Image (cartoon, rainbow, N blue to C red; front, side, top):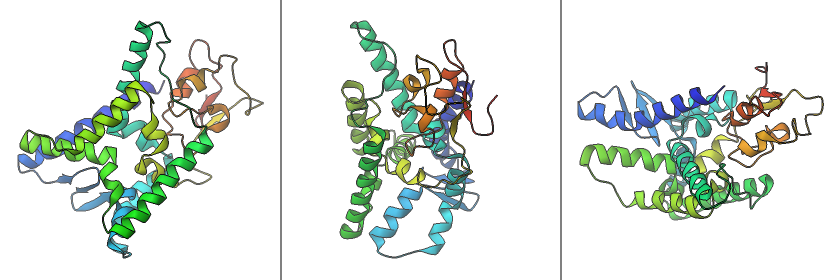
Amino acid sequence: MFRPYRRASQFAVFLLMFGIPLLNLWEIYAITGTFYAINIGGLGIADPSAILQSMFAAGQFAPPILFSVFFPVLFAFLFGRVWCGWMCPYHVISDGVAWARGKVRGMIGGSSEPETWVFLDPFKANVTRYSFLLLGTAAAGIMGIPVLNYVNAPGILSAEAMILVRNLTISIEMGFIAIVLLVELLFLPRFWCRLFCPTGAVVSLFRAPFTLRVVSASNKPGSPCCKEEQCSAACPMGLAPYREGGNLLCTNCARCIDACRGEKGAGLLGFRGFQD
């Protein structure tokens, strides 16, 4: 099962978010920066969406800066949108909010199972995400400021962690995160990751025929593996994994695979090349 490994990866990255400024306070500068851009021993690694915004805001193409997105882009080509499902600090908190929402619904007589707000189907959700990305990028070019960087949840959380460690306070940007999480808790679970996150939108574009993805070993891969559709119920992005494993919304979080291998599942889902 993938869940323990995913959780270990998520919490390791979450702790790294606080560990970097702590190391810097102790005058250890082997690693510096935030999740907008990190420098590891002189090697710069940046969020592709942040670089995209910065270039449009500056109004110029900067080849040296593009090298900083080489490793994130290569990683995405190989493993898909695993940053979102396995590492993103916002996604960890969103998981917690989804769990809390399920508990509250269970106490008032509803289902206690995690849910995904699917008021938009996957196609419309992707149209919304990329429309938001395009509008934000156009605004960056017109206004001369990286507009979407101010609503980039993982970057904001990382910057806030640095401010908290250094100054024992938080900035007003944390209010944006609080509002988004409150909306997820009360009204629209998972809406930010499905419909708006600029990092997720950009990263999901880098894929190829060899990119890791969820596939079905069923003789009828377009049909549910089991009548309960455990995989669809488990998917935080509101997909039907047995036929939509290649969708741009998929984060390769492997929840569907774990659910398919569970007590009521058919055990037919897996990552391409890694099925049992």
